[in-house]
Length: 174
Image 1 (spheres, one colour):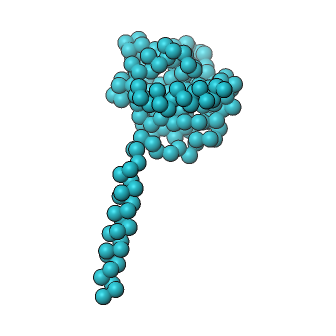
Image 2: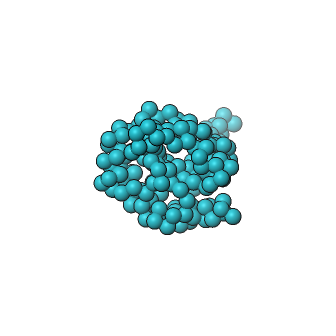
Image 3: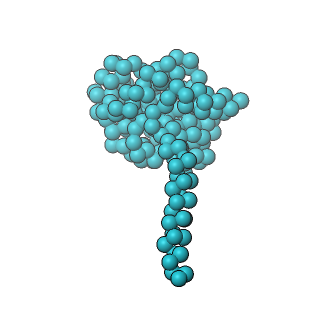
C-alpha cells in the first residue's frame, strides 16, 4: 500500500520543480563570472590593420562588451537599439565581432551603423569562450576595477536598457 504513494510523491516533487521553473525569466541565466574579474584579452581592431585593443585599456572605466556577428539575426534586432543608446554616450561600448570574417563585419557596420567606440575581432571565438559566450548577442558590463557586473543574454531591448543597464551604469559610476 505504501509503495503506491512513491510515484505520487515523485510526481508532486516534479510538479514543484516545474512550477518554480515557470516563474523564472529564461533570459536571466546566472553567469558564474558575475563579480569575478573579466578575462583579459588583446584583439585586433576590426577596421585598423595592425592596431590592437586590450581590455586592460579600460581599467578605471565602466564599459560594455557587446558580442555580435554579421550572420546573427538577433544582432540585427538589437543593433538599432544599441545605436540609439550609444548616442547618449553613457559608457564606452566595445563590439566583439564573434566568429566572423573581418570583411563581413565591416560591411555589416557600414550598412547598419556603428554604435561602438571600437570594434574588435574574435575570428576564432577564443575571447568569447573565455567570457562564456554560447550565442550572440551577449553583452557584459565591466566595472572600473575590471569585474563583470552584469551579463545580458540575447538582444538588449529598450526596456532592458531603461530598467537594468542605465541604473547599473549610474550606480557603478558613483
